Image (cartoon, rainbow, N blue to C red; front, side, top):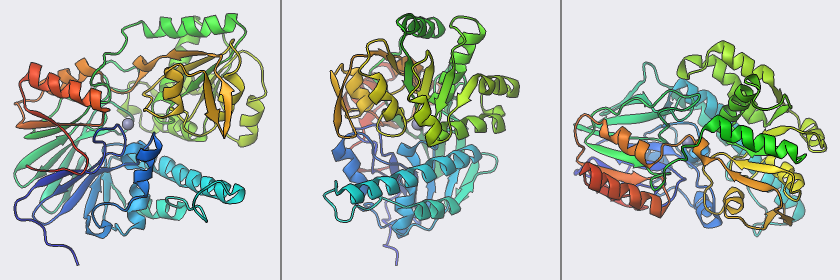
Length: 458
Ligand SMILES: [Zn+2]
């Protein structure tokens, strides 16, 4: 039996992405319904990841529906766990988000299963036996509950949701959630006005309350000429006789990197060395670029030209062979923060040699290997062993798919009227504080930094 809902609704509860960039989960409670906006995994430091193992704070069977802003796992990756705990409702998202979730959730389940099997075989876990957070079966069940939206609109009882494209990745949207006379706008991960591949975010619609991300809330992206900077970096590495490795998020950044490298070769700014994409997930996501060509700036011809220029590394054997090759090349591989995946094998080989370059092209959350490299640590632990960091580490986070401080403010400023309040989420403490100060200082709107587990009345 469902618990009785409070009469003083609607309310909004922050169950994740509060004081950190991952684990986006927001619960909206109305007179008759409990709906979640996003249902993400916590990633990064161990204490954050351990939150994934706690039962969801609301009984999963009491949640009526989930609405997703986009497919990245820190927004969708907890869905199989929620289903495992008894959630049976629909999951509403754009068709492209559904296609990407199919790729990402199945891969996440496989990784969980492999990790548990590894720990059981090597007896390296405190838990006997080690279990996956969720299985492929859980992921398949979650996928069967997906309900892609038509005309960018979804409805359930007194809650209706409009999806507005926000320029972050394929299918990503900010959500205008309307319930009991209130409009609550969730920015999702906000893209950038001049991204190479994605269209600029649509201007925000009317909102009484805004839940806004703050990944780069305290920073401005470097204004360097993108192509020139990347060309210099590649050419310098080749002069030293080294290789270039780019850890990249399989969905979004991997495609941006191979497209950018393709442009550099087309314009003869770098030599025609092979560009490898070593991530089956990134390959599948690249193939979706053609299916959804109306959702980004590239024509089908440009997508095909980009694909023709890159060498796909699909099988484990091919990846291992690539790892033995000491020839000039660029390797783009996942995961983007070097927390797992094939990129780790390339790092083990390339880090100790000072001729090589590692390019970090996206956000690196605290506690991840990518973040350690950024901080200039001299040694990196991979698969239990330390590797000396002699390769050059280059920070290209201005290639990030997240708006910076100015871009966030410029987007908010386009709201047709001032909202009653902004809730700042999805950022480390200092970034959230800086953005909240800016919203209050330069826009003159009340802003609150979301606290984990807190509930606000709307
Ligand atoms: Zn994202």
